[in-house]
Length: 89
Image (cartoon, rainbow, N blue to C red; front, side, top):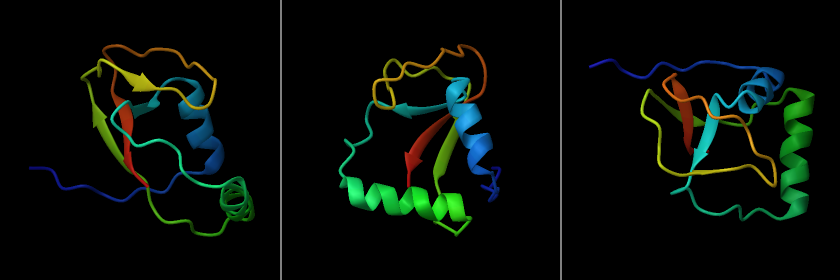
């Protein structure tokens, strides 16, 4: 069994992977619950390069039947490729 290994990614690389459809949010994730002020503080920390904790991503070749888009944005499907699904933050 391969154990998970921590990886560091830049904010711009994460955004790029989301836009390309490489990172997705599965439908079973809970709804977004943060207030706008708390979200703004998180973005401010990211922009300033402060540590924000970790995301747990599941990398798989399986295509989930339903995914959740981010806001009103629709991103491309990447069937048959390794997709990373956000499991936790």
